[in-house]
Length: 114
Length: 114
Image (cartoon, rainbow over all chains, first blue to last red; front, top):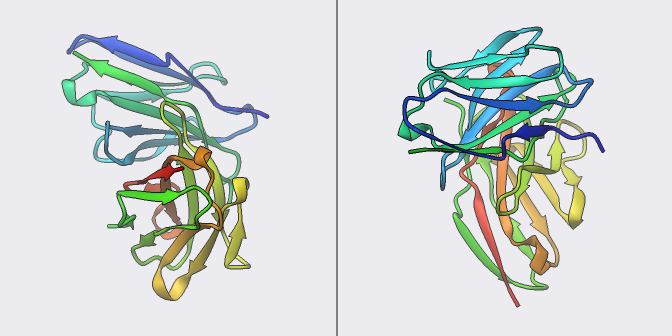
């Protein structure tokens, strides 16, 4: 069964460092998402991406965050200068069609900022 | 703002007993409704979804959910719980009038006692 894969599974970084989280969505999917889950809290939407541009973003997704689909298969989330409060599990998801398609989630990348 | 409420943070049931996890959402004319399960250290797995049609939907692992528009609810049920069902369960809603993103509830942690 096709799946969304994410790397790394766990990354530890120092505050102020740049981090790139990588995702390989399911190959025929067209919509891509990043969500995050701070420990003990709910899963929160960060950003959605379609047709090579951001289609929607939350207030969490400030100028420190960016997304890119550099090569037609990877979908990356970059955090430019990490803060302690960026520590969370980051989930990538993809979807094939706009209206009724379900989101398929990866297993997440745990980011720990020290 | 669009919101999803799961009023029970923790639920403990005995193995073999029935289960109902509650989910309510804020008003939306066209909600698309989902239940996801997350085992410790794992990603989000889709249990079932409702888009339209029969309001009682069947999912994987013996779960079902019923959409009640009058109550803005989408409660998850299972007639007989197994120890392997212990996990965290998230209700999620896509409000079609408000874009393509999923809004998650805070989750319900299910403990199963033998």
